[in-house]
View 1 (cartoon, rainbow, N blue to C red):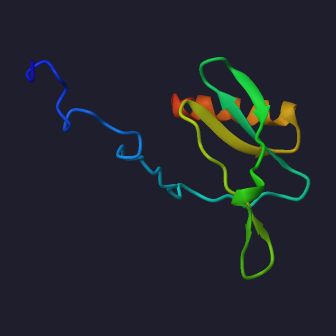
View 2: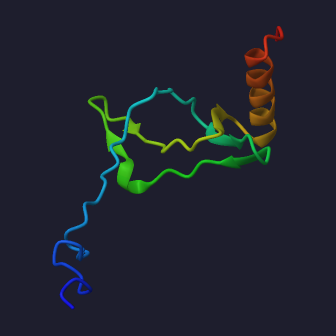
View 3: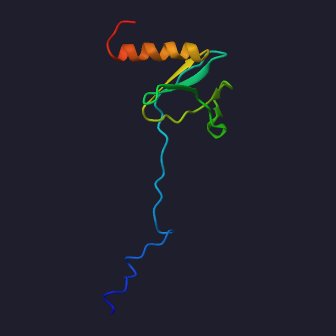
Length: 103
């Protein structure tokens, strides 16, 4: 009967499980023009949406300018543009350049 009982080593408690901590990695920085917004293009659905910044990730540098961080999602492109129509042109040029077409 002792063989059928679970061993104490086999039982895992939730407090013993390790939690993986994701570390943010700096990819690049961009200086946005006044009045511009940050847009993202989902390559799977071809949908352009405005990026919302988290208030938690905002910090100020030495000159007093706000430094906002964006968590980059896979299969997305990002650009700064004045409006959605302008962002569409930016993304079109990005895709054409990546395929080797002159823009």
